[in-house]
Amino acid sequence: MKWLIDALTSSLGRKIIMSLSGLFLISFLIVHLSGNLNLLKDDNGATFNVYSAFMSTNPLIRVLEIGLVVGFALHIYTGIYLLRYNQQARPIQYAISPKSEASWFSKNMGLSGIAVLLFLLLHLKNFYWEYHYGDVSTVTIDGKEYKDMYKITATVFGQWWYTLIYLIAFVLLGFHLNHGFQSAFQTLGLNHVKYNPLIKGLGTILAFVLPAGFAVVAVVMFLKHMA
Ligand code: HEM
Image 1 (cartoon, protein in one colour):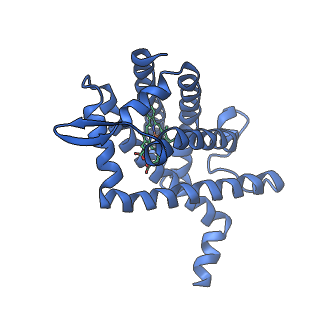
Image 2 (cartoon, helix red, strand yellow):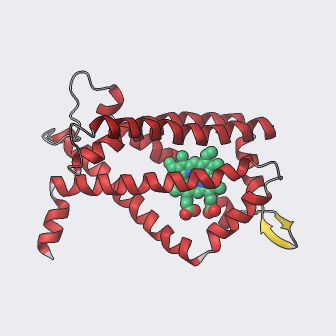
């Protein structure tokens, strides 16, 4: 057991944890965005409310949620550790080493990460907390009563400053994903001259499509419900 703990807390072990948890969180974002696209349906939020109820009551999803919390916790804890370690010693960098031509964002993964974390705290308060512990109204859909998650979403994005904060966060998330995705593959040794352009291209597409998808939802909700 000691060998495992030693391996996981070594510099390389920590970077592997960072990579695997990061890739896992990207898979969460893909699922999350596809669920959010239900908000674009012109049905007063009926599909989205049924979807939200399913996600918050289905036992399998509840188990996956524990994995999600662990994934975020590992990524954030290890990220903060590596950030402090790099600041103090600077011998270990991201797999894509910040050469002089590296972008500002690739050299400052910690900063974009902290910004996304702050966004996440605000987001969980706006949505998760409100849905589970807030005073939520209900709607009847096909004879069944559902908490009105659509209304919570409309209230948040109906306020321009929230929409603006969210849009800024999505841009920062994009930069974080763009560098993080490629770096994860390099850390895991899954890089090869032949496939590197493919990995880079895929990373850039993901880093654009995911934030852009979230942004479209936010802007459409704003336009429909602006206060
Ligand atoms: C337009 C953009 C977004 C919308 C409308 C949105 C909406 C929601 C909603 C409705 C929930 C469900 C709360 C619940 O059922 O308990 C939720 C949860 C969550 N969101 Fe988002 N979200 C957006 C973007 C993001 C982004 C960019 C991230 C990550 C960086 C994120 C991370 C999370 C997390 C971690 C949860 C908690 C998951 C859980 O309930 O298990 N969201 N979001």
